[in-house]
Amino acid sequence: MNNVATAVMDIPDTAPVVAPPANGLSQITTGRIKKPRRTLIYGVHGIGKSTWAATADHPIFLPTEEGVNDIECAKFPLASSWDQVEANLQSLATQDHAYKTLVVDSLDWLERLIWKAVCDEKGVQSIDDIGYGKGYNAASDWWAKLLRALTYLRDVKGMGIILIAHSKVEKFENPEGENYSQHMLALHKIASAMLQEWCDEVLFASYKVYTKTTEEGFGKTSVKAIGGNERILRTQEKPFCKAKNRLSMPEEIALSWPAYADYFRK
Image (cartoon, rainbow, N blue to C red):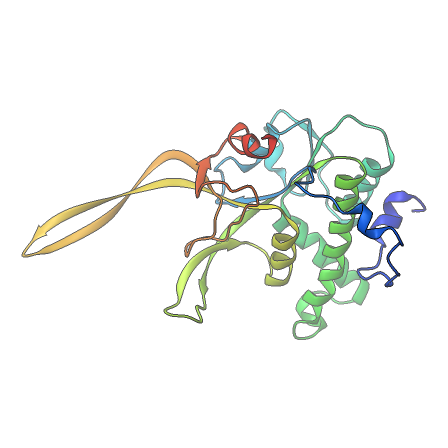
């Protein structure tokens, strides 16, 4: 594919060091630089991540699973290979359109397509057949291609980026104390770290949980969790979840696009 999008996805990760321009100091600015947000939202099945993304500003979905079939939104055909994903990104990069937000739904199904592309390139059946850890390191090259393409869509086409993923619970090895369980992205750790670092916000979608303490007699008490239907976004990392934000948001907000957009539109 000889076009802008392919060139963007083939940009090397490192660029040669060049001398700064003579007037470099005159280009210094102060204050915030406004750009479309790079948002990663993850959580349990069926909580409403795709529905939340569908209410963003003029979204177009790039689906790798069938979760958006029942949502009224603009969407590409279901991508069943990396080549299809790349072709969709190419069309957004090279053609005129009115879409303001790209939604990749979901990252964990996209990871399977990336692993298949790696296996095809290496001539193996499973990514584990490449050797201990080598297959996942090779997959990071595909993730880097994706992030370069998404960066182009954000910086050149002015599109916000929303990445959707499912969650999994894993034991966190705490170097400062006892280990504990934590909600994490349902991705390999290399891909998870790359995507979290690239995004401005990592938001964990969950249900609000309340606790009730009951006296059981003889000085003993029991604490029970009481679930509800109130859906929230966790915006800051806690022992039970990965999260971050660059907007000075409170620890939790409602799972609604206006509640989130209010912070970056200020």
